[in-house]
Each structure stands twice: as structure tokens, then as C-alpha cells.
Amino acid sequence: MKFSDFNFEPGLQEGLDAMRFETPTPIQAQAIPIILDHKDLIAVAQTGTGKTAAFLLPILHKLAMEHTVTTNTLIIVPTRELALQIDQAVQGLSYFTGASSLAIYGGGDGMSFENEKRALTQGANIIIATPGRLMSHLNMGYVKFDKVQHFILDEADKMLDMGFVDDITKIANYLPKKRQSLMFSATMPPSIRSLAQRLLHHPEQISIAISKPAAGVTQAAYLVYDAQKNGLIKFILKEKEYASVLIFSSTKQKVKILHKELQQAGLKAKSIHSDLEQDEREEVLRGFRSKQTQILVATDILSRGIDIEDIGLVINYDLPNDAEDYIHRIGRTARASTKGEAITFLNEYDQFKFHKIEQLIEKEVEKRPLPAYLGEGPVYNPKARTKRPPMHKGKFRR
Image 1 (cartoon, rainbow, N blue to C red):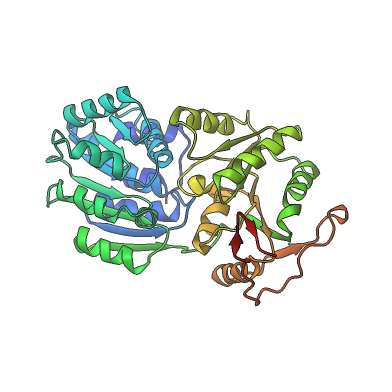
Image 2 (tube, rainbow, N blue to C red):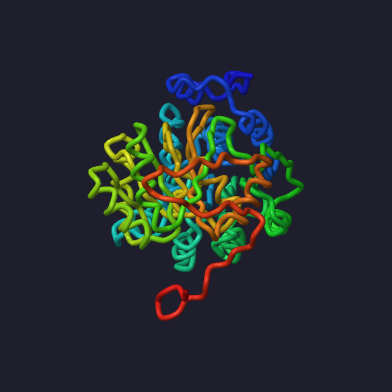
């Protein structure tokens, strides 16, 4: 199948040709005909499968055919980064169609709020918004969504994890009852099915490669004490040259400390976390995308929804709490059928949890030996439920 087989509006097809998009991914091949046929849809697909274009292309086709000036489509997403990414995708795909869009998210100044208000009152074809920020506008009474034809929830499971279910339900009440509703999620827990039953009408269902890493990811793990992690990460980064490296740590405090230590070691590293202002975060991401920054240290704010190509290595400095989040983290590399590496650091408390991850992905991950100069790491005992000792006066009780 080719994109030309969908008979998109000529301007939209011209944009695809200009970007050399020829063959749709599986989620695109299955979802686009359903959306063009005006049916509701619930789609489960792992990160990096091309689901953003799967819902944007048919929507942009409809917009190009109708030439509306009102808000036609509302897309709800969990994070400002994903809102900006989708907005950029709209701008690229709609270059020859003239569709307008705006990303609405928290963290901006008063001027950005006024720009959002103007778009919501005067009409932008596609609004991409985080739930909390959109509710701030809706509560003021000037938002009119009576012409909305398409309601899209992206990363629905992540939004429910973040506690947005009530906001999503309230937002849906502002929309026409007669609309097309689409839900995209990386997982399908009971809470997502319950939400889909309330918001979608007799939806079609698609499931693409649930909870499996991309085939191009080479996975490995090191058994390492926390005190050895920084020495190991410097060893890995100096042993082999990577154009782009993404490192995930569990807290913003750890991110800041590791960022500083990597810079002191002469490595081109930046960090991104919730303490940064939005313009600072955007500047960091621009530098990483353009390869001016080689190493980016981040919290899970970047585990989903950030489309950065050619990331050669993802390092789990800390193991995530949720097995699904492991999939999303390592899904930042080996995107669109490319190759990449994912390395995970396992301390003495992580091994049972990582064993559960291996069961989920149906693969035993290679355990690599530490460099001799770092000393011995923890003994591998994946079936032992080793728990961290309780905290006492700011330190671990020995």
C-alpha cells in the first residue's frame, strides 16, 4: 500500500510527496480508512509506530475538502511537549493545504494565554491542548466548540495515570454529541475501556504490537550499585561514539546532578525537567534535535510523545516503576525501522522488577560485565524481592 492509494486531497498529497512519505506504517494503513469513513476508533499502538500521522492525515484531508474557518478538531494530550510535537506535525503535513492549528498548554506567560484565547474565540482549525490548560479557558465561558467534528485523545493511558479523567469528561461535555471520537493509547487497562465506553460510539478497534520493543533495539543491562552508576555511564559514553544519547533518571534532583557531572567530564550534555521554564525546555529540545547537544538527561517527561529521530542510545540510569514505561523509554530509539541501543542499570533492588519486564517483553536481556576498575556489582538474583531499607533522618538505615 502507498499513501497515494488513499486519494488524499491534492495539496495534502503534495506535502507527503515533498517529505518523501510513500509507504504507511501498519497503524496508518489500518486507521486512516476507518477515520476517513467517519467511524469512531480506539487504537492501541506502541510509541514510534506513526500514530500521529495516522489521525492527522485523514483529518487534514477532510479539512482541505471542507475549507472551514472554525475549530473543527480538538486533540487532547498529556504534556506540553506532545502538544508542540503534534502542532509541528500539523504545520509540516498541511503546508500545501492552509489548515491552521494552535498548541495550548500551561507554563506560558500572559501573552501566550491571550494568543490562546484569540484562537479559541476566532477559530483555529485544529486545537491541540493539555487538559488543565484547556479547562482554564473553558471555565471562563468564552470558548465555543459547537462546530467541533473530531475529538481525539492521544496517549490516553498516560492522561489517566496523571489524573486527568475528570477533566477529559468535562471537556467532552462541551462538544457536540454528534462527532467523531478517536482514542489512541499505548496500553489498554480497564480504565481506558471504561472511558472509551463513555466517550466513543460503537468504535472500531485496532491493536498493533502491544507492549513490545521495536525490533531494531539492542537491549542490555549492567548489574551496578548506585555509587558505581556515574563511573559506568562515563565509561559507556567514552567507549563508543553516539550522535545522540537520551538518559532517563527517576527524579529531577538526580537529573541535575548527573547533568553537572557529565559536563564536568567534558561531555556535551543538557538536562530537561519540570523546573525549567517552557522556553528553556524548547531551547534544550531544539539543541538536541539539531545534534548541537549530544547527551540529554531527562525525567520521564520525555518517555512518551517526543519525536526525535536518530537517537542512537537510551540509558535507563534508574529503572522505571512501571514495566510499560520501560517500553516507552527505550522506544525513543530505533524509531521508524532504524537501529538503536537501550542500556539499563540494575541495582540490588531492581532485579525482581526487571525480571517482570523481561517476562512482559518475552525476552531475556543480556547482562554485561562491569569494567574491572569499577569493582564488583550486585549478585544477579532476579527472583529475590529485595526491598530498599526504610529511610531514617534523610539516610538509608544500615
